[in-house]
Image 1 (cartoon, rainbow, N blue to C red):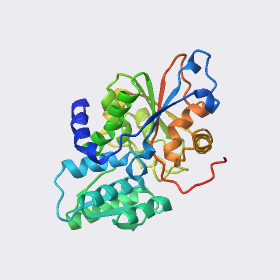
Image 2: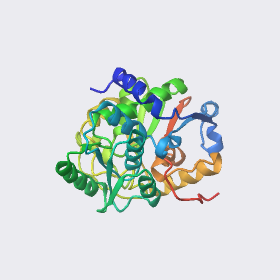
Image 3: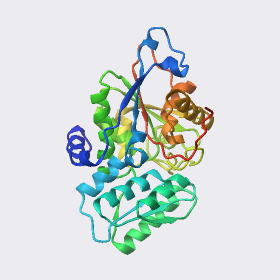
Image 4: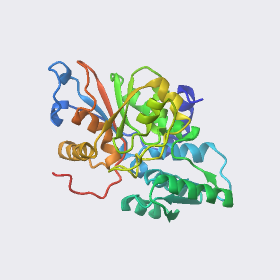
Length: 316
């Protein structure tokens, strides 16, 4: 079971190893968001989790696994679209643990370079995350290494839930939080923390509607996995552990286009000089594109969850 007490306990364990990332309050009008006069007075609360170690929220779940589970001499193994591999390799480096990371060919060069720089044994193969996952499972069986799953693992979700703990402390006024969804570990952990206290909205690319399709089907189902954010928001299906949490605490999922995500990257750069990867800009794109239309007086929180990108020109 994943709940507030367990998230609190894990947060205390990982606290010396992760950053408490800032929440920045920004006027919606700065982004050209057309809201009612009364709603426009409520700024957007953006949590800049891309400033976390490894460039994304994933460091929280990685340290939660390595610090609360018994790690064998063979070390750890992980499959990743990129960010999870960066996080696990970083945590393993800091804790002196051997790590082997499997990533698909769609992983960005920035993420591949960061994994190598952290000293992990990196294997690139297959076109999608599912291919890397299959290869990592084979290695785990052969080596006896401990698998660190990027989302369908209790310790991973407890670590990611610490984002919600911090967000509530930093922006207690919000009544809605938009969170990008890939496999669901992040939104599952955050939703477990808030446990219905606020509205949780998932945001996915149209080209990778994993939670959207699962909510419609009533269970995790295989979905297409492509698009601009394929290296971070495109597993074949959401996790089994997070899905009951989503059914209970995620109000709904909205879909955004690749163009909307790219426009959001440019807007965050132009307005705040924040350089995000596509997955990191997905939640913001729901507001800027109108995929999520806030109600009058609604106080919005938005998680900017990743910044591992090599792009230097977001349209200025």
